[in-house]
Amino acid sequence: MIQDTYIKVGMADLNVTGAGGVLKTTGLGSCVGLTLYDSLNKIAGMAHIMLPSSDISRDESLNPAKYADTAVPELLARMERIGARIRSLEAKMAGGAQMFAFASQNETMRIGPRNVEACKEILKRLNIPLIAEDTGSNYGRTIEFYSETGLLLVRSVQHGVKEL
View (tube, rainbow, N blue to C red):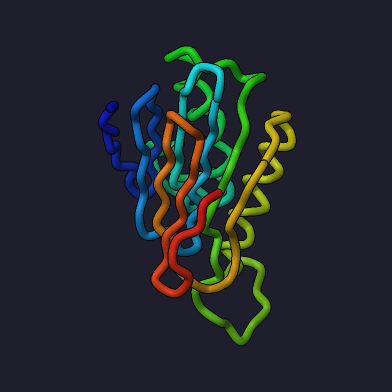
Protein backbone atom coordinates (compact mmCIF):
# COMPACT_ATOMS: atom_id res chain seq x y z
CA MET A 1 0.00 0.00 0.00
CA ILE A 2 1.35 3.40 -0.97
CA GLN A 3 1.00 6.07 1.71
CA ASP A 4 -0.06 9.49 0.52
CA THR A 5 2.19 12.44 1.22
CA TYR A 6 0.25 15.61 2.03
CA ILE A 7 1.64 18.88 0.71
CA LYS A 8 0.18 22.15 1.98
CA VAL A 9 -0.59 24.92 -0.47
CA GLY A 10 -1.04 28.17 1.41
CA MET A 11 -2.88 31.32 0.39
CA ALA A 12 -1.22 32.94 -2.66
CA ASP A 13 0.89 29.82 -3.00
CA LEU A 14 1.30 26.98 -5.49
CA ASN A 15 2.96 23.59 -5.54
CA VAL A 16 3.37 20.45 -7.62
CA THR A 17 3.83 16.77 -6.85
CA GLY A 18 4.38 13.43 -8.50
CA ALA A 19 2.76 10.07 -7.81
CA GLY A 20 1.67 9.57 -4.21
CA GLY A 21 1.37 13.25 -3.38
CA VAL A 22 -1.78 14.98 -2.18
CA LEU A 23 -2.00 18.75 -2.53
CA LYS A 24 -4.24 20.47 0.01
CA THR A 25 -5.38 24.03 0.56
CA THR A 26 -7.82 25.44 3.09
CA GLY A 27 -9.82 28.60 3.42
CA LEU A 28 -11.04 29.07 -0.14
CA GLY A 29 -13.62 31.86 0.01
CA SER A 30 -13.36 34.24 -2.91
CA CYS A 31 -10.01 32.63 -3.76
CA VAL A 32 -9.86 29.90 -6.39
CA GLY A 33 -8.12 26.57 -5.93
CA LEU A 34 -7.02 25.68 -9.45
CA THR A 35 -5.63 22.21 -10.14
CA LEU A 36 -3.86 20.85 -13.20
CA TYR A 37 -3.28 17.14 -13.81
CA ASP A 38 -1.19 15.08 -16.19
CA SER A 39 -2.78 11.63 -15.90
CA LEU A 40 -0.08 9.91 -18.02
CA ASN A 41 2.74 10.92 -15.70
CA LYS A 42 0.63 11.29 -12.53
CA ILE A 43 1.83 14.84 -11.96
CA ALA A 44 -0.46 17.26 -10.13
CA GLY A 45 -0.31 20.98 -9.52
CA MET A 46 -2.39 23.35 -7.39
CA ALA A 47 -2.54 27.13 -7.07
CA HIS A 48 -4.42 29.08 -4.38
CA ILE A 49 -5.25 32.20 -6.39
CA MET A 50 -6.37 35.34 -4.56
CA LEU A 51 -6.93 37.91 -7.32
CA PRO A 52 -7.68 37.87 -11.06
CA SER A 53 -4.90 40.04 -12.49
CA SER A 54 -1.38 41.15 -11.59
CA ASP A 55 -2.22 44.52 -13.16
CA ILE A 56 -3.55 45.60 -9.77
CA SER A 57 -0.39 44.59 -7.89
CA ARG A 58 1.15 47.24 -5.66
CA ASP A 59 3.84 44.90 -4.38
CA GLU A 60 7.44 45.74 -5.21
CA SER A 61 8.20 42.07 -5.69
CA LEU A 62 5.38 40.24 -7.43
CA ASN A 63 4.19 36.93 -5.96
CA PRO A 64 3.16 35.05 -9.12
CA ALA A 65 0.97 32.60 -7.16
CA LYS A 66 -1.30 35.42 -5.98
CA TYR A 67 -2.81 36.32 -9.37
CA ALA A 68 -4.58 34.14 -11.95
CA ASP A 69 -2.67 35.59 -14.91
CA THR A 70 0.72 34.80 -13.38
CA ALA A 71 -0.10 31.70 -11.28
CA VAL A 72 -1.18 29.48 -14.15
CA PRO A 73 1.99 30.01 -16.27
CA GLU A 74 4.16 29.52 -13.16
CA LEU A 75 2.29 26.32 -12.26
CA LEU A 76 2.76 25.04 -15.84
CA ALA A 77 6.49 25.77 -15.73
CA ARG A 78 6.94 23.93 -12.42
CA MET A 79 4.95 20.94 -13.67
CA GLU A 80 7.02 20.76 -16.86
CA ARG A 81 10.23 20.77 -14.79
CA ILE A 82 9.17 17.51 -13.10
CA GLY A 83 8.02 15.87 -16.31
CA ALA A 84 4.43 16.90 -17.04
CA ARG A 85 3.32 17.17 -20.64
CA ILE A 86 1.32 20.34 -21.26
CA ARG A 87 -0.78 18.67 -23.97
CA SER A 88 -1.96 16.05 -21.45
CA LEU A 89 -3.21 18.49 -18.84
CA GLU A 90 -6.75 18.85 -17.56
CA ALA A 91 -7.97 21.40 -15.04
CA LYS A 92 -10.41 21.40 -12.14
CA MET A 93 -11.19 24.22 -9.77
CA ALA A 94 -13.16 25.17 -6.68
CA GLY A 95 -13.86 28.34 -4.72
CA GLY A 96 -14.57 31.74 -6.19
CA ALA A 97 -17.42 32.42 -3.78
CA GLN A 98 -19.04 35.79 -3.24
CA MET A 99 -18.65 35.70 0.53
CA PHE A 100 -20.43 38.96 1.35
CA ALA A 101 -23.44 40.73 -0.12
CA PHE A 102 -22.91 44.34 -1.09
CA ALA A 103 -25.58 46.91 -1.80
CA SER A 104 -23.62 48.36 -4.69
CA GLN A 105 -23.03 46.53 -7.95
CA ASN A 106 -19.41 47.70 -7.98
CA GLU A 107 -17.35 45.38 -10.22
CA THR A 108 -14.33 45.48 -7.90
CA MET A 109 -16.35 43.84 -5.11
CA ARG A 110 -17.06 40.74 -7.25
CA ILE A 111 -13.66 39.21 -6.45
CA GLY A 112 -14.75 35.55 -6.38
CA PRO A 113 -16.62 35.58 -9.72
CA ARG A 114 -13.82 37.62 -11.31
CA ASN A 115 -11.25 35.07 -10.11
CA VAL A 116 -13.26 32.26 -11.71
CA GLU A 117 -13.67 34.19 -14.98
CA ALA A 118 -9.94 34.99 -15.12
CA CYS A 119 -8.95 31.35 -14.54
CA LYS A 120 -11.34 30.14 -17.25
CA GLU A 121 -10.03 32.72 -19.71
CA ILE A 122 -6.40 31.71 -19.10
CA LEU A 123 -7.18 27.99 -19.38
CA LYS A 124 -9.03 28.61 -22.64
CA ARG A 125 -6.12 30.64 -24.02
CA LEU A 126 -3.71 27.80 -23.12
CA ASN A 127 -6.05 25.12 -24.54
CA ILE A 128 -6.30 23.31 -21.20
CA PRO A 129 -9.78 21.79 -20.76
CA LEU A 130 -11.65 22.56 -17.54
CA ILE A 131 -13.31 19.23 -16.80
CA ALA A 132 -14.94 19.94 -13.41
CA GLU A 133 -15.62 22.83 -11.06
CA ASP A 134 -17.39 23.66 -7.81
CA THR A 135 -17.38 27.44 -7.83
CA GLY A 136 -19.55 30.37 -6.81
CA SER A 137 -22.22 30.62 -4.12
CA ASN A 138 -21.33 32.09 -0.72
CA TYR A 139 -19.52 29.45 1.32
CA GLY A 140 -15.93 28.47 2.03
CA ARG A 141 -14.20 25.33 0.83
CA THR A 142 -11.16 23.15 1.53
CA ILE A 143 -9.77 21.00 -1.27
CA GLU A 144 -7.47 17.97 -1.59
CA PHE A 145 -6.06 16.85 -4.93
CA TYR A 146 -4.72 13.29 -5.36
CA SER A 147 -1.88 12.81 -7.84
CA GLU A 148 -2.46 9.06 -8.22
CA THR A 149 -6.02 9.47 -9.50
CA GLY A 150 -6.65 13.13 -10.29
CA LEU A 151 -9.50 13.13 -7.76
CA LEU A 152 -10.38 16.53 -6.31
CA LEU A 153 -12.20 16.41 -2.97
CA VAL A 154 -14.09 19.55 -2.05
CA ARG A 155 -15.11 19.90 1.61
CA SER A 156 -17.41 22.53 3.08
CA VAL A 157 -19.22 22.83 6.38
CA GLN A 158 -22.57 23.50 4.71
CA HIS A 159 -22.36 21.03 1.82
CA GLY A 160 -20.23 18.12 3.04
CA VAL A 161 -17.80 16.42 0.64
CA LYS A 162 -17.98 16.46 -3.15
CA GLU A 163 -15.79 14.42 -5.49
CA LEU A 164 -14.75 16.06 -8.73
